[in-house]
Amino acid sequence: MEGLIPLVNRLQDAFAALGQNCLLDLPQIAVVGGQSAGKSSVLENCVSRDFLPRGSGIVTRRPLVLQLITAKTEYAEFLHCKGKKFTDFDEVRQEIEVETDRVTGMNKGISSVPINLRIYSPHVLSLTLIDLPGITKVPVGDQPPDIEQQIRDMIMQFISRENCLILAVTPANTDLANSDALKLAKEVDPQGLRTIGVITKLDLMDEGTDAREVLENKLLPLRRGYIGVVNRSQKDIDGKKDIKAALLAERKFFLSHPSYRHMADRMGTPYLQKVLNQQLTNHIRDTLPAFRSKLQSQLLSIEHEVEVYKNFRPEDPTRKTKALLQMVQQFSVDFEKRIEGSGDQVDTLELSGGAKINRIFHERFPFELVKMEFNEKELRREISYAIKNIHGIRQVLPRFPAWSHDTDMAFEAIVKKQIVKLKGPCLKSVDLVMQELINTVKKCTKKLATYPRLCEETERIVAGYIREREEKTKDQMLLLIDIQVSYINTNHEDFIGFANAQQRSSQVNKSAVGNQVIRKGWLTINNIGIMKGGSKEYWFVLTAESLSWYKDDEMNLPHNKLLLASVASRSFIQQESSDAWEANRSAERREVPQGCG
Image 1 (cartoon, rainbow, N blue to C red):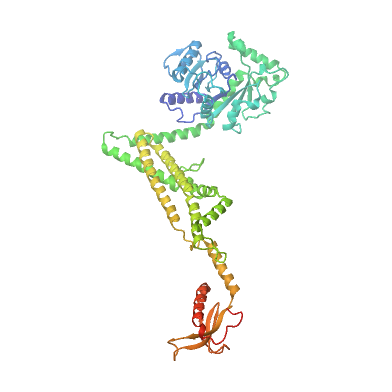
Image 2 (image 1 turned 120 degrees about the vertical axis):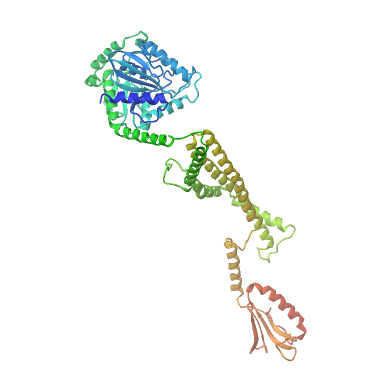
């Protein structure tokens, strides 16, 4: 068990040397806290040496991987200074400052590239800690305006890993509910399973107040609990107070304070070291099986890649062509899967690919149609103006039906104007689909990131083709709308409102008229082939549904009866009958009865 922490240390050094720190999720402890929370003092107390940079503003601007190793002699080593041992810890502080400025510059900027420091000492327990930059709110000097977000992202990069324990450092003289460290820890560890609370500055609390409930894990409980420490004050640091004397003063504080004396054995820096050593060792032991399995899986994968490229000859053009075709084919398969849908590599965070396009068609496009402005009052005004403008100087007489040719023209003008409004939502939907296709292409080309030029060219060519089809799609869509505008088929079944209105109007008129007699009287029929003997007189009766004639006015023995095909032809027959009646008026023998016709 004692060799677990050194084993992880060697792995960290190996990955750091390769520039692959994030290749595996190594078990580790990350120290998180706000500015002036006392993080540096806690770490220095653990080492019993002053070795960290101090000052105002952000002092820690790069992650510091601090590896503490129990040894008989005391010295320090940096991974970037191999073979050089530092026995003067003032030089260690200077080297940290120089190495930080080398990467981040002199403008107080930050970087996620870690500094690896290993300290051998008889005063430490084997332990590995990662000191992260303090959480800040306001940019200082030449720092970027989003420095707070940058620091937050860097901290989250470490503490969001499941194998990382979180050492949340919080000063006791501030409200624990507003602790920046505990807030961040709660985001990634809401159950408090891998968070260790450290309460500093207990000696600086207002008189009459204490942090007893917090240290007893009652206020904001954490599974691994809280540990209180008392660091050196700034006056002690400036006065070069020895850390060993400070540790004795810390022990005396807990033993003499009435609120903490009952838990003094579970407080202080020495106890914190023991807890962290034990917690990290147990954590490595618990995560070792899964870690080993993942490491073996990656090892097999790398060995397989090595076997593939074992006999690879870069100068062979056929291999280049084959590799290129395979990558392009894989891009095509990935793109098709994202559009058509597939069970592997499913995005669980947001809609993308074919699912998002489907949503655009079935949700976004109908929403855009519904969102189109429709003012009924304005529409009625437009209809009124359209009918009047089409009639011009003419005026529709009341006895004519309201729906006429002029009304058709007004109706078409209004409908065409409404159809044209469809162009906006249609074109917008095309833009949304095109953008999602471009995004899908970018996601699929990530696998080609090893070959930047191929990735760039593939994205450019495919995106260019999509944009080319976009223009043709828009032209085709506008053409379809123009086709609809060019001819309004009012007899189409979609116009059920108008068709039913005509049908109901015909039925009403028919029921109102019934079989009403329109005109009757004597009528002379001349030279009809079906009759023999030239002209002959008949008693004529015209109704709304038929035309009949008889031998006499008693309407006996009807000679013939014509059934009309449709009530719609009534006006035409009435006019024809009227003309025939006038032509034969001289042949009438008696007057038409009063009230007929």
